[in-house]
Amino acid sequence: MNRLKELRLERGYTQIKMQLLTGIDQSDYSKIENGRRYFTFEQCKRIALALDTSMDYLAGLTDQKHPYPRSRHDK
Figure 1 (cartoon, rainbow, N blue to C red):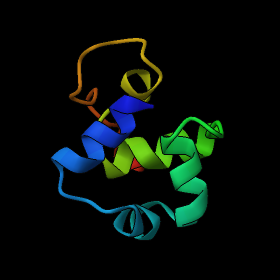
Figure 2: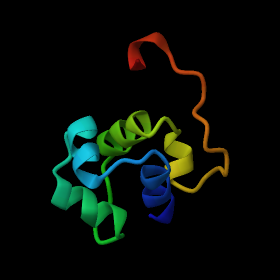
Figure 3: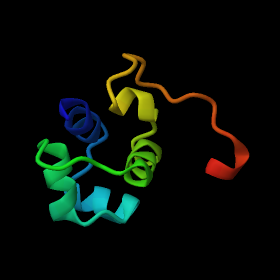
């Protein structure tokens, strides 16, 4: 989950800010970020939107940080 923490810090966000952006409780977010808990599909989607990246990047499937073009209903 190093990518998750790196992106959060690059954007200057705290874990509390991530809670506000994603609706994921800060303690749960901390566990996800530290690898003590896996995120659900929905949580991954919310985190990707909040950090302006792709779910593939968060999952380690690509090294491209920038998100794919989004469909209108995901904005």
